[in-house]
Image (tube, rainbow over all chains, first blue to last red; front, side, top):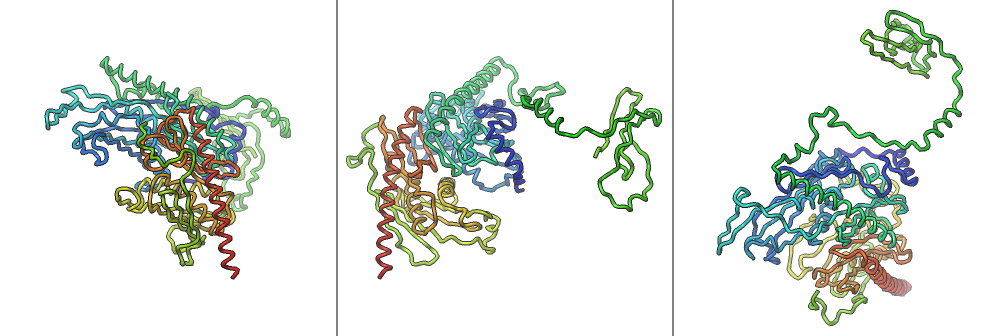
Length: 391
Length: 245
């Protein structure tokens, strides 16, 4: 299904908001959305929620013969999938540009930066090595898939444990998790991607764009860094023109963000390790709050109230005062009162409809009768007001 | 980093010799311009087809046309004999798709597409011999081909790679240097305004070195732009001499 195109007024609104340094959800220009990392019951499974973007990553391993060019190194395989579950715009089995870009960026961020020691994955040189397969699935697309995918991938890799092996001559014994504890991968550093979206020919930038902001962006700059301030990968895309000092400024912002995110990942890993050691319950089911009526309640949307007072008084001053005075209510029947008589329906309906029998009902749907405001009070002490359509 | 990767003839901070031949290779009238670029050992064949109006016959292509701009379509491929080991490369694989995408984005930024609404400009690039700096060679060749085709552009798009080895920035890395594990940064630049059209970097680099590296790459690109400019003028002179007779 094709994506609904963005209307011009929405585009203009978003660009105007960016110009005034305001964002739809009230964040600052350099703020990330709320990041939540949860691990599953198996080692190597992780869900990352970046605002409403949800990404699942699963790491698995397998013994395979190594590549001919590198007989002593293990193999890392990355795969990112976009399914229609994430967004109706994604079609199944279609190699779109976004998919290629995300996959390549994930590969470059994790493979070329050599964050995992592949030599330690070698079991028998030239014959058997571990192939680590990282599968990332996007569960919900609300912008900034790249960052979420990279956080999920590196968290899952840090969480993953591979089975222990023993080599005796030419025999390889792979121990199951019950026989011997599985071993974690040796990870040198955690590269994390930070995305910067550029608007209006590169004059404004936003960190962590949401889906609406992504639609109006001119281009994207993705910088992958680790907490030691080493840049693992830079990729600019979208055909924007950048200046050198913009790139340098972005890298400084990225280093701050990356250290925060790395803290978060480490804390989540620590929590999970503690819970597993104490024998408590862990996994996805535990991370969802239960037995709360408001468990699926959405957070309150922050609304900017700084100049509401002035705008409101301005509007009030500008509008004309209403000419009619409101009359006092008239009791029509038990439990039903009528206030005023309203104004004539000005919707310009056909004259045929005048002949319809005019029935008085408590809904304000009948045509050509004057609209009135009915106030009903039921005996159960619940007031309901049905407002009239005032023209 | 061992010194094995440096062969004695590599000069730091200087490009390898750049040889360009414009305009030859095809009598086919549909191909408006071609360009063969030889950057030390990387050879590249490039052809730019004439801008054509997206027609009814091509299925689905009408929907791709934009009402106010031209669509730029790039295709990047490597010949099987281009690298040291003969390797069959399937057409739609991820690396070539990514490279095609980057080329497309680079040129969408540089070409004045508003002058050709509802049309498509095709750029086909094939690498005959790869010795590092594939992306930069592609961009330089495509720039020349577009200039030869007479398609208006904001500026020459020049690209070059730069790397960092033992605290020294090196410009224009060859294959051995790129795969040796050091950093490599590919930069596409519009030299007059200093705008970066595309920036791509792999492998680890400390943040403090980034400034020096980008600077080295930008200087190298400006050098390349001088060469390209010289070649274009020379070609024009030759062509005008021939057509005058």
